[in-house]
Image 1 (cartoon, rainbow, N blue to C red):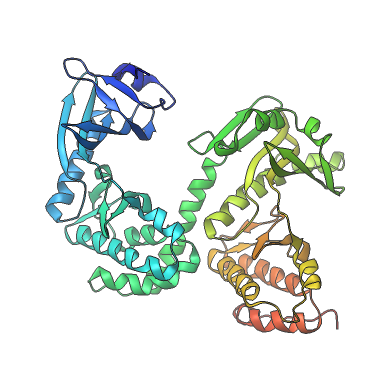
Image 2: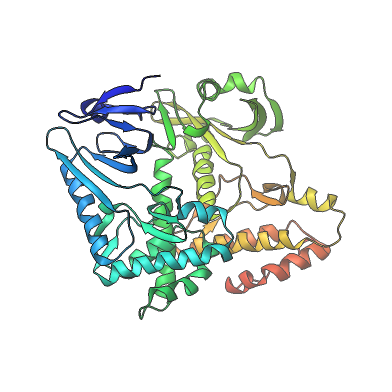
Length: 471
């Protein structure tokens, strides 16, 4: 098949990424052959793999001169500072059409993000230290990678490269830049900061200020991400009419999911009921050869409708809470889509669609367990859950045992419509105290004794005494 020949004007105006391969027409020059697209920001830039003189190259096409100049200046600054980065092969300027920079293509390289997701903490630590060394070199030269995230660091043959020259700026605050870097990880990695910061090779000990800055920066990142979950972007697609507002993950978006979003009651009529509640109805449905859960949040009365019409629906709260938990490293059923019925600006019923978990709630699982002792993995998971909530200032709001599902050897947190992030430390401690006591209210006998001993550090920090109400 002969690849399509596209113009620069067409690529600048198109809103969606083109299928590869294709040829890029450049007036007065040989066409570029685009083999694979890595990033496409409509009207701003296109990043793709190509060939030049028989060698693979990474080409960045900029449609705005300022972005081209920032990329070129950043690459030069990293090179002069001694930071390992892709070698620039050529820069081509066309003031009417676009601006090109080609660098070496890092074949067989993976991002630091890939390793973060696939390696154990012990295996990942050397790579984390190597990345901190690169950051330190930039800082000593008065520079920083303003957008320092794990996908902007590439690993090849045990060497770490920094990419994205456009993000290289004058250094402002070293602590803030380091905090942004460490905030890419979930809170259970924070203990590794003490080891990794030694690679900074400077008088910058791990202090409460740095750890506090990491927590604050993590929350900033989470809030920025949560705003994306309610609009159209790379990962999400938003739908809005006079009668409903909806958003779905693009990775799940098919014709069948779109039909489910448009006509949820039709799907509910074909689904299997899991729970028939007054405030919420829970159903199981098969879509695209997968089992999903639809949770419909009902309106119970006129006054209930009046109280809910201006506030974000419980489906919306649960949708964003599920994404928050995922960013914090807490397991919860993957959110797929969310819809709010609306009459203009007024909200009515709402729907949340998630993956279906084949498992048992925590209480039923413990009753069915043939082991008299609670397994170590479960205890560590519960400890990790409360530790993450503590360091992230998040409360669940309803920690009854049926809101914890075990599938395989994974504990999932469900029913997230009362979950809240607290700005005030006092309100957070009050809410987490309620969570902790409500969790303990599920148990009696040896199970209560086990969990009380496990979670005692949190009750002591909260200055509360847990009571066994089933004695």
